[in-house]
Image (cartoon, rainbow, N blue to C red):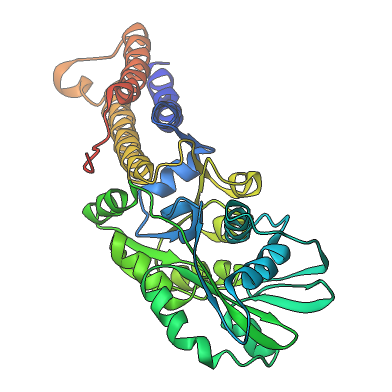
Length: 368
């Protein structure tokens, strides 16, 4: 009877779930919504964090900064075409162009036959003219010569702005540039991840020059630029195939497949519902500093789990031989069933008490 009581694995069954429950609650205190115990356990192993640029590293609120007309267009005509194309668009860059036109008092006529071309740009008809707005890939595919604008494009990109080409009736009409400022906490957050020994990669659909300009401001390790929305999950898979444990952090609809592919998907709480739904962890306040906090809480939680498991196994390992009478031939000692029941309860209380110590844990906030 004593042996059966001692062998009861109550403490062992409590060791992991109690710690994970407290760890998830600790995350909530810091504005980190952890959806499952699996996500909390995996977060401690993260070796690489991939950050989307627009809306994650940057504010996601770009502003119209430059207009470079060409082929007989003036700034007003160029802006009219661009704003007409993007009127009603939900893309941050499109909203910035429309807002910039409204601020300057530009008349914005309605467009017809609007078409979004994934990863390239948009097309429509404005006042009966076929117009395009997008990147160099779109212009090349449509056979539009933009070589006269190359120097201006490079200048704007090197300044950290996002230049896009505008074309009308098969000819380049000019460049429209917008800039998205970096969040104040992005650089400290990336430094905190570096302090944890984690590689940080920025992924974006922007051109390489603009991406490198932003990357230089926040000091990421690598940049993946010109990545189409449908290719982001593939880039995550490549990193995983290289043996890395990858966390993806994003906020947009086009980030959802990559968030689902990553070992741990982290969504910005201020982002889209689709991204949040696809993620394992949601950073409610939208601050990137909470990535390091989530990883730190995960490590503390798993350390606590290991302590509980050692205690539970240790109790059984030491208790069962005594209960079976291993000491009786030498010292005449037999363990009473009542004592066994008391120690079994004590082991469970010990495990729960140790798990509750996590409630007083304070993550290291090295960026402060």
